[in-house]
Image (cartoon, rainbow, N blue to C red; front, side, top):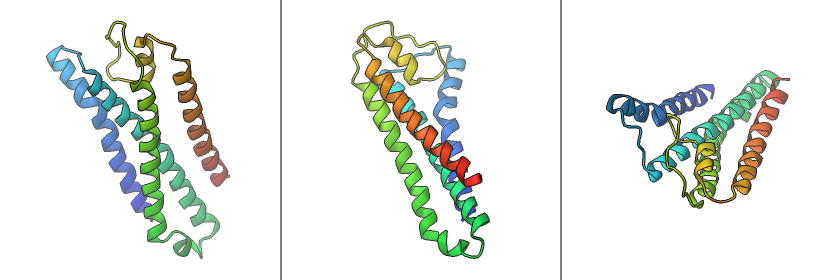
Length: 162
């Protein structure tokens, strides 16, 4: 079962790096750092989904190690192939759902300021600076969702290793 999680983690790392590096290399070669708003939002969505999937996948891997250490004789019964596939699929779905929520909240904002972002990739905080309306609800939602996901995954991982 751990090989399934490691395969998912390596696939995720390949996706993670392919979100920002190709555009960054293109910008370095062409000396043109322009990106369209839809391209920027696609990059934000992919980047956030990679981060979310990684949180959930590492939590699933911690649960797998917990079962392997605490219930070694029942490990193959508890962590059968179906459960591993469900945990991996749930990790990917939760990560994508989290990124869709965050990206949709930023997508609905009106942008009227300078459209120059001084970063080599698009992210939510620089986009919030460009918005010409109150971004407090977006910031609150970003902190709440990120905090809940980060805290719950970290807490579950710490408890499972404890």
